[in-house]
Image (cartoon, one colour):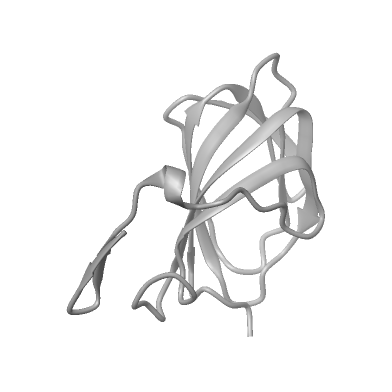
Length: 121
């Protein structure tokens, strides 16, 4: 990792996979967070959900999220409605919207997630 004057460069292989709460066969690398970089404004991660992997439906009180699908396909659930998502679909989720994502495909579903602010306090 390179760090100078608060700026950082980190290669993805330098970050371990984690399994966040309420995620099933779904893992994330926390690339830019208040714990790993000089930021208080957002969380940026890459997630990989194996076939049948998902995050349970949930809402955020104050956080906004952007999902950018890189590989694979699955279903994005927004307020109970499921829509197919695949490579280069970009999903914006304002605070208070119930959502979940499911890998219903045959290969890993890989996507970036950007969240602001990084905590839902």
